[in-house]
Length: 197
Image (cartoon, one colour):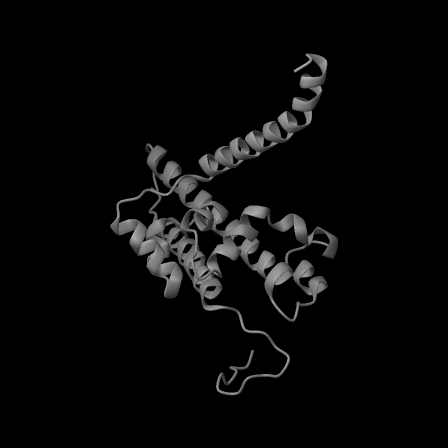
């Protein structure tokens, strides 16, 4: 592929925002770092206890797979929901052995929320970490702009980000409380009528 001259903008083509590019690089670094660690493990040539090697290998493979899944979800969600002009979805689908109709199943709402937060002037670090769980707060402190500033502020204040599971539980609690409030609004007049109140 030829190098493009960035000094001349191409009419009609969109630019991928810096926070998205930085997220791509951060996830790729995770993949490379864990893959290199896995590649550097020395396996014995004679029978011996390899429990630690197996554990480290499985751990590295898991981290590579998790970061790869996050990277694919980030890029797919960005291409499908954010980038303008919208790329050819059939090409993106073929690149990941999917159908164009299957593209929305390659990412979830948490990934979309993470992208929205990445692109915000006031990014919610916890939402980013929940949508890209292979990243850590420390990874986000290397970002430039609003994401890096918000991550550094969180780190410097000693605040630990809530886990994705905790964020989901809190959201379910809020949704449940809202449903209860709505139900009470419907039932309250009925109760007053039934009990003569």
